[in-house]
Length: 250
Image 1 (cartoon, rainbow, N blue to C red):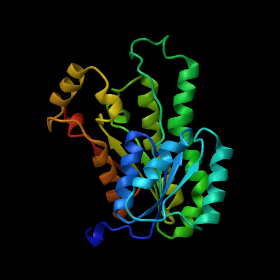
Image 2 (cartoon, rainbow, N blue to C red):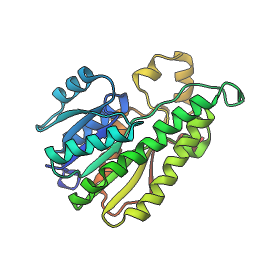
Image 3 (cartoon, rainbow, N blue to C red):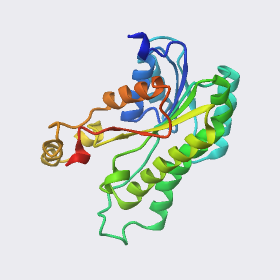
Image 4 (cartoon, rainbow, N blue to C red):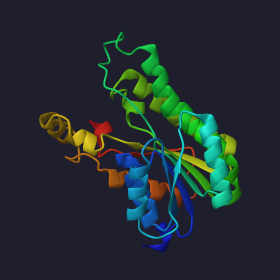
């Protein structure tokens, strides 16, 4: 790999690592030379299997619940004891459920709270818990996986769109507050062709690809490439990298 995109010997922590995007991020960071901590919530077998397939060495698996701040504090303690500092934190954990935007009654308070607890408070709490480890790195960066739904207002439900908009605003706020010690950026994919999307109505999926200016959906590995780019572009902070095949243009 070109030295400009090398992250050799850096420590990366990926929260939400066993999802389709999270796994791709782990592969990209490991391929760039990182030692990756694969952080899972419920499925240790999936995390172990992923860690075993990553290129390079020094990878590990750790459990944490992004909706539980005490759990994230324990994660930080384990990381501190194991690696001493963290160079890259990727917040890839997220949740949603399809609810038509016009069906306000179906988007009940419990679902709204769960979405914001996972998609906004979770990344904030993770950065808060790992702040000291990122500062200790001397080149720390927190990368939040957002969505173009934050800008378009088109997505699985109204609360999901709002949670990603809040995540982008948090990225700007924390980039200002934590500079110069820690950079904070967002990656905003469009519709990503994960196994979940491939399992939906094929005609709908084909229509979404047709409506994308590049004529195809983004794949998870391209989100991973964007994370590596964000980690290596050391002058970038408080910004959002859009990886959507041009969907916002349509």
